[in-house]
Length: 536
Image (cartoon, rainbow, N blue to C red; front, side):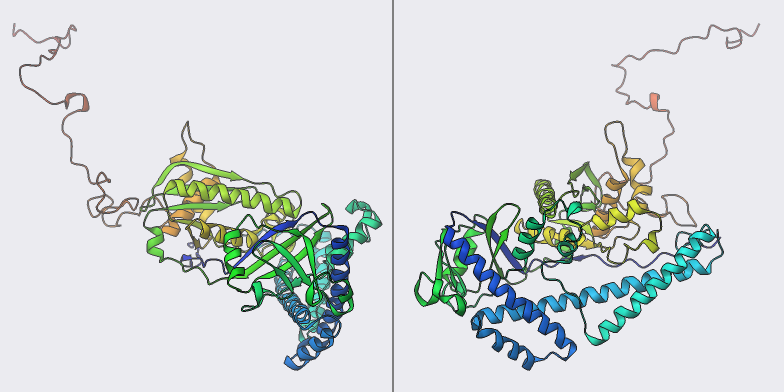
């Protein structure tokens, strides 16, 4: 039997810190005239943004700096030069994102086609292995999969043709909201409610910051004491209630979170970008401020490993965490931080942030400097061709917000002076369950497969192998050749060593203190067989 070939394990690395900051505050106590002006400005600029996106998609791959300048010049007459710059930049970013999603869609189709072609080439009923799937179970399933193969090949041809020509499909306000219009009953919306959400999502009220300008932004200006004013587009300049065609809102913002950092930037006239949006469900207006900052310098990997590590296994409903010392030994009991991802996007985001906050606070109490986590990426692992009938598993991995989780964890850990060590996820669950689950299970400690995986992740982040012991030399199956455990360093006292032989029994090996301490004598045998002979 041939030995299983394992794939190469990538080296662990310290993840880079966040490069940007975003904070949000509610616009309270808005007057009726304020709401009217915001709606008119958002609707007008949203119409211009839709037209500009249409022009950008029409240009396709022929877009250049001249066409960009022409689009901006056409928008300036109906808004302003700064509004036009923000609109064209947002349009270009949206088109570039669509191109990246288009390439990911092509790779997904190619992976599905390869799997279908392999399984269709196998005999019906052929069993597969852990690495390669087998054939389909019946002729009916084989027929349906051959039909699906033709469908995927057609989709792939269309996607490749569109990519070569630079064509993309973009829906301002989102494709999901667009599809809800055709099934309002399932979305639990009326036509008026859907229309209100559709229009509010297509408004445009975002302005890029400018360093050196007053308060860091000339279009949407927010003073350090919270006063908000907007530069009105040219067709709406008659609605101004302040100088230079500006409209000042009655509401003030405070930014409880990172407020001191925001006020420091605005006072120094450093660039701050702002976005105003309306939450239809709550009926509230919000202002989001964002700015870039230098990437937080990461500490060396050896420094992150100096005080141990907290290994974290990411699951669909919780984080499984375990503390390890610098030698890879588990310390204490496993910890689990649960969250619920079954509701709305805002609820899921709040659940993730709350779970990460609890994880970081516990990590700080442990006294370590880093968290070891898997470098997960499920972009190519969601196809039903790969996982077949495992609908529950496909739903689980599709629901795990790996991208948002990594971004949240890195940014929140940086605020707590903690580093994130990313490791290769290969075999962590399997090897952790094999080597660590049973040894750590006791009457008072319940170990799950995920807890054991967190230990494997932490050991890999520390640079130790996942196995609890190394195999002894083939020529000498004992500890006499060399120390075979890797759980403790060579200088740690009390580590396992070759034990000296003990000739006395355990109950007779107590120390002898002399004649001062009386010991019980051996009683004479009372049996005939063991009685001493008298020589007679």
